[in-house]
Length: 435
Image (tube, rainbow, N blue to C red; front, side, top):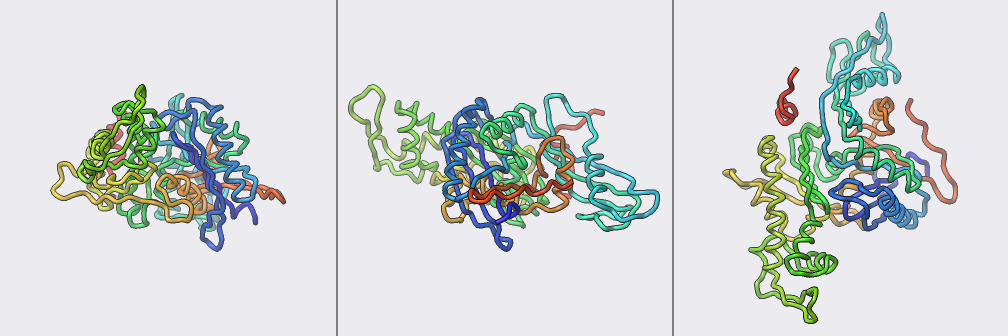
């Protein structure tokens, strides 16, 4: 089993760290190992303690290694969309004085030309996604190699993130003893599995409700057009339960999972259960409806804020509607609540559905992100590798990634590297949204 057939996805979440190892067999991905570890050292999706995160990564990787019977050395890592900036870029080079065949070196050169720009000192390039190439005025070309031309152009999307976010992620992974094969914007990875081809093409809002934060991403024409990050997620629901019921955080989490629902109208007042209260010897009896009201209140606030951002961007008018995923969407009633809040001000209810992986052992929405990472890796093209080769950091194009692992019995050699005043961000990103 060679390196090119193995993909390792690393999802560093606020509440848990997940590792998935998959093998590509005749174009299909077979999951052969999964690891999950409780997170430490993260706050609202961002690493705040590198050593603690590195330790948690090692724990998740060890689990995946044991189940897959391999030694993991390289991973595809997700990068949160916090303060993500997206901008269109263009590069152009002269292939030669006379027409000649375009080669790999020309593709790398035109990608490098697209990166010639001044970035603020606090930001760093994460990835560059090629959109199309133009050879002597002929556009719409996905792979210009072996074509004859004098001038080569490339249009694409550049993704930049705060240096702190990128540095801390890379440092934690390296401290865990792993090599970063590439890093990918988290919403793009999730979209690889949560959205169908048509939904990515015509336009859909993907909302990932994690433990520490909630991310809304707008995917249109198979591109990431806009992201909105709300700094609250399922962990804040648990904190509300803990504070309102005066119970331990672990007990509150168990209550949420065992009895919680996000739809108070569907909860029963007569269904009551005991709750351990701090400072009291006897448990208190709480109704399912009361617990649902606590959960619903926090989730309504989150959806309300996302509704405002998405409405301003006109993203809720896209034909694909809304797809929700992430660990918190395991709560019963979450779809109905999301539809109710996000449909405010509309004549018809917005189409909202939940995505959950159907792979054996991964049938929980919390695994969407990690599964998306290995799926993106398997879809990587030669052009994506060539474009990624010119990036200043060891990352791949935002929509395509790779990862490797080596066998414990017989380590495999690594695969070779391929050689004026601006309008507001929303107006800039969505000025040509439906083109």
